[in-house]
Image (cartoon, rainbow, N blue to C red; front, side, top):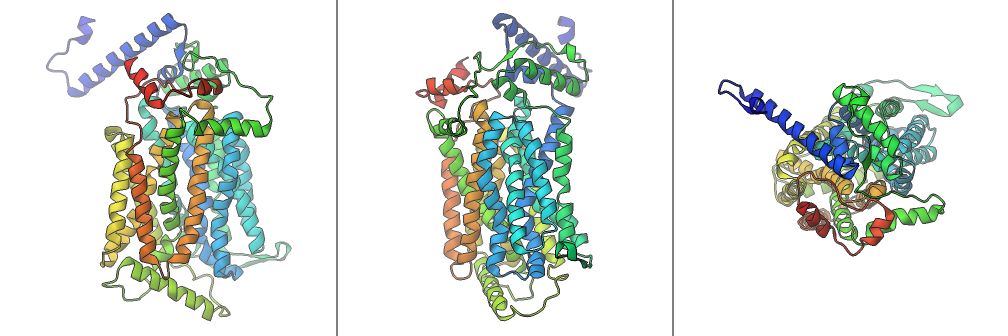
Length: 564
C-alpha cells in the first residue's frame, strides 16, 4: 500500500487526481463490504452507488427527457399553433382561450390518478401504458374536423401524457446515484424549459409550406398546422420506444418486497455502466433502512388513494409538503401564466407601433386593447390563414425558450457548488428583481429581456423535484410529484385566464401582484431544509413507519443521520 500511495514530483496533476479517485473508490467499496458483512445486507443507496455511473444512467436521462418534452409540447404547443388553428376554424377569442387551456385542465384532472398508478403499479409500467395512448390521441387530434372534437381529443392527449411528470421524474431520481442526482434532475428539468423551442424549430419550415388538401371523408381540410401536430408527436414516440429497453426502478421493486428483481436490475445497471459481467456485482442482498416492506393489495381503490395522499399532509411529512407546494404555486402561477402570453406580448414590440419611452405595461395593454377592437370590427373579414403567423414571432419564442434552457444548464453546474437551497433562493431573487425593474424601465429591448427573465422563476423545478424525491418515502414519491403537477397546472390555468382579464385595463396592479407572489415564494424557500452531503436516506419507507414516526420531525431524522 505504501508503494501505491507514494507519488513522485514528476507525476502529473491528472495522474494524481486519478490515483486519488481509485484509492477513494477502493476504500469506499471496502467500507461497504465490511458494512455488508457486519449487518448482512447492503443499503439501497450504497448498492446503487456500487452499480456505477455511465451509459445506463445517461440512457435513462435522455429517454425521460423525451417523455417530459412530449408532455410539455402537449401543454404549450397550442401557444404556437393557436393563430393558425383559430384562423382555419374561425374561432372567437373565448374559444381560443378555452382551447389553449384544455391541456392544462386535462393534466390537472389526470395527474392524481397517474401518481397513484406510479406508486402502486410501477414507474416504468405507468409510462408504457399511458404515454402510447396519449401519443395516439395527439395524432388523432391532428385530423380533428372541428373545434369541439379538437378540444376533447387534446384533453385526453394531455391527460395521458401527464403520466410523464408523475413517473419519469421519480424513475430517474431512483436510478441515479446520490452524487449525480441533483445535476441529472436539473438536466431533465431543462427538457421542460425548451418545450417551445422544440415546437418552433419544426414550425419555421412547416409554416412556410402552403397546401390545402380537402378530405371529405374526414370533413376537414389538411393544412400545415395539422402536419406540425403530427411532427410534434415524434419525441413521445422516441421516449416510449426506448423505455421498452430499460428497467423498472430498483427502489420501487424493493419497496414492493421484490428484492431479487431489484438486485437483478442493479446487476444490469452495473453491467451497462462498467462493462463488467453481471456476476461481478458484489451486492447479493439489499434493503431499505433495515426494514421489512409490506404492501397490502386487498384494499379498495378509494382507500389506496387515501393511503397514498394523506401521509403527505401528516407529520413528519406535512411541514415540507406545505413548503414545497407553496413554492410551486408561487413559481408556476407566475411562469405558466406569462409563458402562454410570450408570443402575443413580444409581438407587441414588433408590430410597427412606436414603443419608445413606454413601459412594458403601456405597450402590452395598448396591444391587447387594439387586438380586442380589431377582433370585433373584422369578425367577418377573410384572412389568409397561411400568413397569419409571422416568422418574427417564432424567432422571439425560440429566443425565450432557448435562453431558458441555457440558464437551466448553467444551474445544473451551479447547484453542485451552491446546493439546492441556495440555488432556489438565487432564482427567486433574480426573477423578482427583474419583475420590479420591468414596471419602470422604458427601453424596449431591455423591457423584453426583463419580461423574459420574470417567468424564468420556473427554473426551480429541478430543485423542487429533487426535494420531492429525497424528502418523501419511496411509496409516496409518485403521488408527491403528481400533486406538484396539480398545483402547478391548476393555478397556471387560473393565471392564464387572470392575465387575459386584467391585461387591458389593470396591467400594472396585475404585475405588482405577481411580484408579491414571487416574494412569497422567496420567503418560503428560506425555510427549506439545509443541504447536506450525499448520505443514506433515513426517511420512513413504509406506511407503518410513517404512522409510527408521526411524532418525529424531519429535522430530528436529519440530526440522527449526521450523528451516524
